[in-house]
Image 1 (cartoon, rainbow, N blue to C red):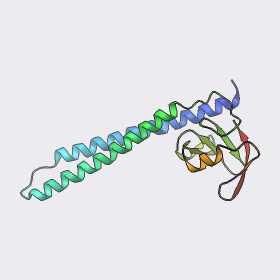
Image 2: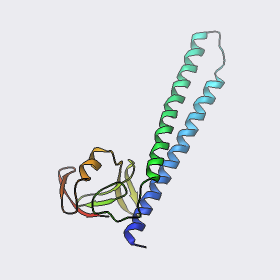
Image 3: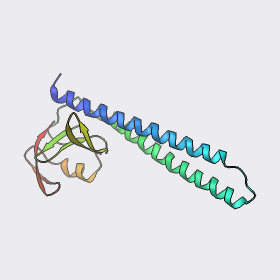
Image 4: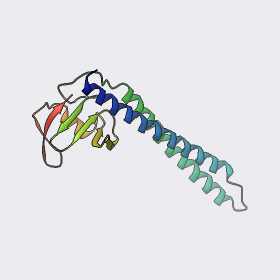
Length: 152
């Protein structure tokens, strides 16, 4: 197997693990918010009870939205093809520049992978969109001027 494809597979697996962990944490937080709402006992002051239940429901709803977003990110990442060597930055491509390394697959931000800092970009992020029409040797704006040194 090509070393570059193996590298991209490692990056994709790392991203999947991060997203699965985020899904588990969010699911747990959502369950805890529901449990807190269920445990709220009716007090003599009805408003206090209703406010506490409403706050718990809002927290649960927030976690539910986060859970859906994480699941959508994971689904989109699973559709990313890392088995090909690309000539231009597209979803599934690894891009090395003079100052940074990028993996276009899902937006996780900076991740340390085997001692190398890799910036995980969503294909719809502004930086990924800026990179997509470029190729090896082209310049782009990232913390000032930068140049693509490798794409695969």
